[in-house]
Each structure stands twice: as structure tokens, then as C-alpha cells.
Length: 482
Ligand SMILES: Cc1ncc(COP(=O)(O)O)c(C=O)c1O
Image (cartoon, rainbow, N blue to C red):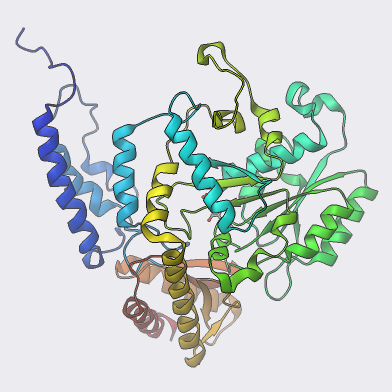
């Protein structure tokens, strides 16, 4: 029949040709990324308007698809790997990471059980153990890889709930008639704590925000008071989520003091080190790990500071068996045996059944750079952050809005006018810079005031790029702020 579609994959020769072309395209993209505008300045819907709304009925040649990709999609993304993209926590794209993602795509295995891909499971065990050692966590801590810190923290809180109310797995929280659980976290902590509480039936209102000190660290005496008041009012304190590297300023909560409160009041201590835990790779930053070995769980996102491509989040739990007790179910069709030795079924340690082979990219990147290579790069990011802070302090129009602890700098133009006017101007500077396509910053609120923020973490960013961004900020401040 004339209109019969060919079966099977695209012809092997065509695939090989496209792969070679794509290899060149990716290498060119990487080499010349600094020449691109960082982000489009289009209105929502502008990209959709350029794409065919009719679902494809017949096959299109790959050439044609990739041409559309170059014409519409690539100019429509924010180029996180651009060396002057300094939003959020920088970007961790690396060449070894890109190569590893290509291999992962080709293998396309499901790492749900050991049997569904033994190497995926065993590599996950291996890289988790490397990372555990780099984080100086005792051997007792077991790990599991998820996609994001939000999911890791939700699982950590679920483990805390398992400890306090083991029957919740079977009968649900409402069936237990317990007092309401409370979770404590600082006013600087990430909203993933509330999301986790919502997801596991504890409720957003039962996440209590503890005020922070002048350096944006959890105020431990207030934590004690809040816990005591809650106990008096018949709530059940469940957990504290302390942060190492908060989202706005990268501040670090006083973990050793918080640990004491948790031990006294029998609360679970979860550390959100999504960004900041990576600092542990630097021997001179040993201070950052103080108290970690006493925690019950800790999350780190190696896709933030440790050069693994998005997404990769590692959760370590002192008694990882809690997660297994909470989530292991053995559907008949998987033909599971009792796990022994390396025959771990990581699907038992969380909600997900199917799991990507994320360990491969961590294994490739961490071998390609080594701990020393990663530490040297992180050290450079810290140097650049301090250098930028010096420039801020030398320009009397600006002020630093928070101490510089990691590769994050918060600052503010302090022009004449009331606070609200200054807020608007700072916000306008960020919007104008981002719209220019030449640099990309974040704005955040600290103590109710709008500040500008840069995050350094991109391995392509050099001192010259930082100087360019500083010049753009100064010039835009001149235009907008006076
Ligand atoms: C401190 C902190 N924790 C958690 C998260 C949530 O991360 P994810 O996007 O991996 O869920 C973020 C996000 O930036 C963060 O900064």
C-alpha cells in the first residue's frame, strides 16, 4: 500500500549522520554559548505561536525537526550554561556531563530494581558511597538518588513520620488519633519543606517558621521556645529542617546547637544541604560539616554545586531501613527475591517505581574532574563571590545585603527615596538586565526588602565575565536608579 508507514526505527545510516551533526552542533553550542543572548524577551505564548498546533499525523524528516529546533526552541530557552547567567545557583553544565547524558539516553534503562539493570543499581550504590565519604558522613548513613531536593525532603519527612508513627503507613495519619505533628524550619528555608508537609499529610500550617539572626541563621533559642509552646498546646514536635546554604543568601544554620534541641525533644533532624553541602569537598571548609554526623537525614543536590547535570538529588538517612519499611511493596509481576548484598531495589526506598539511571552521569563527571578538580573549581567560585563583594563595597551607591558565605552575593542599590521606591528600583534593574539578554540575575526579598542576587557555580564563568556583569549592573543602575 502506497501510504504505509515504515516500521522500526529510523534507518541506522540516517541516525549515524544525525548523530555526527548533532555532536558538532553541541560542541559549537558549548564553545560559543557566551555569544548568545541569555534569555528570550518574548511574551508568554510567543514560542507556542511559532509551532504547529496540529499533532503530527505522518513522519517528518529529522532534518526538518532539528531545523525547527534551531529556529524556535533554542532561541526560546534561557541558556543556563551561559557564563553570564548568574541566577539561582549558577549552572553546572559540563562536557563530561553532556556526554554522560547522551549515553544515558542511548541505554534508557529503568533502575527500579537490581534485576532491571544491575549496573545502574550498583553504580548508584558506588557514587552514593563516594559522595557520603566526601560529605564526611558515617558509614551508617544509607543513600538513595531522587530527582530533586523537594522530593528528597519529602521522603526525609516521611521517614521522620515513620519513626514517630509507624502505623501511619497502613492506617494513615487520621486513623491514629495522634496530636498534630509540627515541623520547624527557618524563615529562610526553602518552600519544599511546606510542600513535603502537604504531601505526607502533616499540613502546611504545621510547618513553623523560626526567625533568623542578623546573618540569616536559625535562632536556636527561639526554636526552643516555639517547641516548648507547641508541647504545652498539645502539638507533637516531629522534625527540624536545618539549612546549609539557604536559597537567598546561602546562610548556614547552627547545626550542632539544633542537634541538641532535637535530641532533647526527640525530634528528627533533617539537613537541607541541597546547595551548600557541596562545600564539604573543600578541606578548608570542614566547618560546614559540623554536626552532620548527628543528623537523621541530609539532602544534597549535586546538580547545584557538584557539576552533575540536572537532575540528581541524593538523600542520606542514618537508618535508611525506615524508608524501606515505609515504601517497600512487592508487586508480583516484578518477581522480587529478598534483597541480599548488592541486590538492592532502589524502588523500595521511595514513592517512584520507574527510576532514571542518574548514577551514570555522576560517575562520569566525578571521575572526569576528581574531588580535587571539583574543589578547585568551587574554590574559584568562592573567590569570585568575594571579589564581587569587594567591588560592591567599593562602590558607595551599593551595599552588601548579607554576609558572603558561599558562591552567592546579595546586594542592593541604596539610592535616595523611601524603602518602597528603592525596592522598585532594585527590581527594575534586575528586570532590565535580564531583558537585555547580556546577563541574568535574581532578585529576592530579605527582611521584606528587595535585593539583587548573583550565584556563581558555572564552570565557564571567568573573572572577566564577572567584570562584564558588574559593569552591566553599574551602567543599568546609573540609567534606572538616578
Ligand atoms: C536550599 C534549597 N533547598 C531545596 C531546594 C529545592 O530544590 P529542587 O528544585 O531540587 O527541589 C532549593 C532550590 O533551589 C534550595 O535552594
